[in-house]
Amino acid sequence: MTPRTDLTNYLIHYPREAGLGDEDPETVLDRYHTPDYELVNDGVLLDRKRLLDHIRPARKRAVGLRVEVEQALVDGDHVAARYRLIAELGKGAAITTEIYMFGELAADGRLRRAVQATRTVPSG
Image (tube, rainbow, N blue to C red; front, side, top):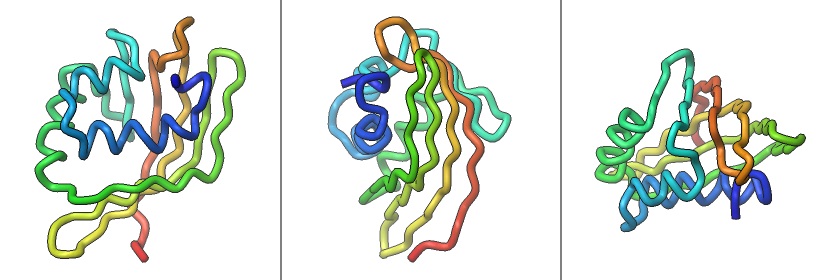
């Protein structure tokens, strides 16, 4: 599965695998993204190193994670999605983030670049 072949399942599985899985974060990142992948999240550029630096501590904080996909579109080498990521933290706390993502795919179907705008919304 790649973002090109099944964007909805990518949006659901990648955060779980990266944030909660036992597999090496680099292996998970490489499964879905090109080596030169860049994510611009709310105007902040995250390259491979910064993404991996973000994933490792997130694994220590999250006890659960789910994604609710509202829209997921693939058009040639471009993708767009609107979804919510609900991170469950210790002691029952949850953070819900609404995400609007636009991306570019590589020839092999993995993401090469993505731009996201996010906002925290009330959980529940």
